[in-house]
Length: 389
Picture 1 (tube, helix red, strand yellow):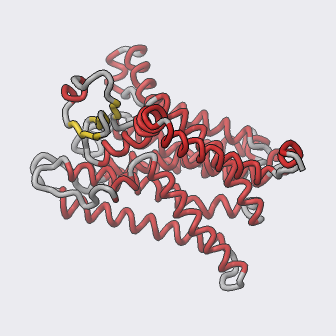
Picture 2: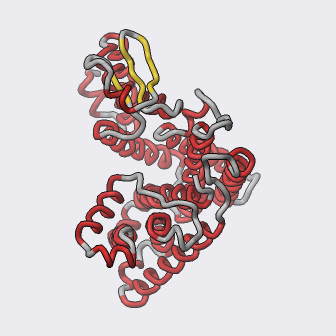
Picture 3: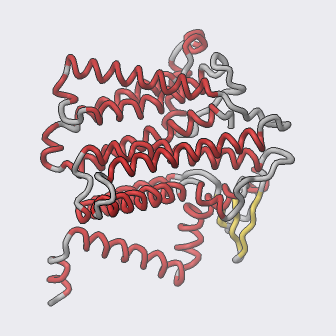
């Protein structure tokens, strides 16, 4: 059989696996043969270097002449030689495109895996994974608390390098995915062996346990290592979490109720999944608005500024468009909440009954991903403000 014939008979899942192995071979082979171009100036500069610098709380990491150096001032990073490879914590256009492509590719792989396991075509799969969205956001706050400890005089990091690289973006996404996948496979194994009646409650409970344990660890880390230390205002401000959760639930409930009453066809397809999606994105918006504009009312020690470019752009646009006295009265972050709600309503409207009838597994998997990009960052912002880190 020729290569063309073999390629033509490949199933989509096997084609995905071939593409994965080919990409992996290209990156590994390129790193060995063209180390400076493929590894140093692509993989290291845009992907691993930022994580390495972040793990050491450095302003940048510099690779030159086969050696890697960490620099801790902006001036030092700016003064490096022009032929040096410089990596700074955070995202770049190249890395964001790379992560977006990876996400889409991995979602396809997950879809093939779910088909092979005959999973993900029922709604209980979606609800079982909801605690893991909260868990992912909470695990990001462990990184934030760990970084805060590193920058506080007289306080040691609870998690040091290289272990702390596992909770730094984007590595943390793979860690959370691995934990979620492992939990799901164990639960399915128990279900099909007759040990439990259904895999979904096992997954839901496990995710809840991970979440509670993570938040408890953050509480102990903050109260034991950071609270009361000079140079930090870290502490416990539970009113932030309470207000965010209540307001998010109210907003989601009102919007979903209005849609169900006046435009029932918009929620007929998604059902209660739509309510959860609305809640997740409302939480992201509410947490940002409260931390940026209403922090004093809530008794938080300082104001939070947006980490994401879209949110920062919206605030900047509002500041430059509305009169100063209006911004002073109602704040300038509220349009972000409006954008999140409109986007969530659009998602609810797009996922009609026809999509679920034609490809329920694909629809549910996409909704899981859509919920994650709202609930995960929102949980992180909420808990950062709750612990003032």
